[in-house]
Amino acid sequence: MAYLIIVVVGVIFLLSIMLRVLKEYERGVIFRLGRCIGQKGPGLIILWPVIDQMTRVSTRTIAMDVPPQDIITKDNVSIKVNAVVYFRVINAVKSIIEVENYLYATSQLAQTTLRTILGKHELDDLLSEQEGIAKDLQIKIDKDTDPWGIKVSLVEIKHVDLPTELQRAMAKQAEAEREKRAKIINADGEFQAAQKLSDAAAIIEKHAVAIQLRYLQTLKEVAAENNSTTLFPVPIDLFKPFIELAERNKKE
Image (cartoon, rainbow, N blue to C red; front, side, top):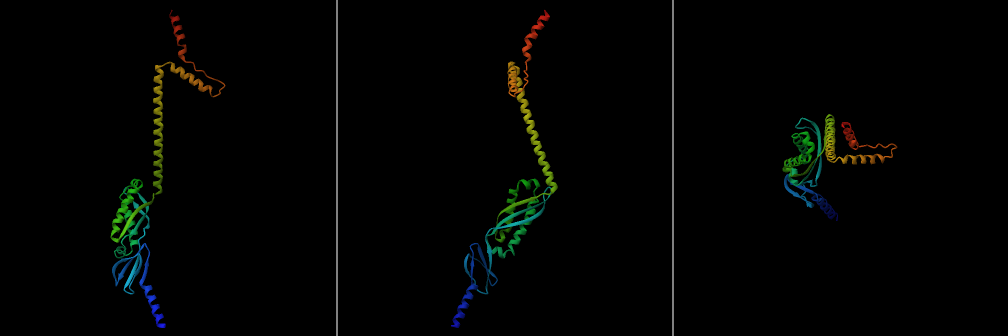
């Protein structure tokens, strides 16, 4: 009886050593006597005691923050830029045997690539074309990490930290641009108003009665203000016949 209990306990202990359960997003890289025999999982796998060793690898997408990097742009402006890299392991065997620590290696590669790519662009391009620059970063990092069995799916630039002096200069430039647009709009309005007045003057010149209608309209507007005193503009043309008559009598 005691012998049976020892056997059962031994079998349970042996099974606990041999059996491993891997989750859906996990893969196990198996080494047998030091040699890699491939990957297994997910689910239940069996390992031979002593001769087999397993390293777990997660295949979920990892969001890695790239610390702020000191970068000198193509036009010699010193800035700090940080980013985030999204990647996942697509070949667990390569991620273990091709690189010592794929997380650390990917982080260092992302930092150096960030400095290299952004250093080739001017500041204005960096601020206005972040989407295109991020795509270039993704392609470069993905190409360099491909031998490690890693797929970089996305790179995003999180923040561009500009020097205080440069921020003030850019604020002044933006304010000057706004003033420029305001003056252009104002000048354009003055030009259109002058053009309309010129057209109105041409019409009045052809039709003398139009000025009298304008006088009457002005009188109506003044009367609508409830003023105690009303000014009635008298057209000079009303006195023109009397002036001509006086001049003829004077000549006679």
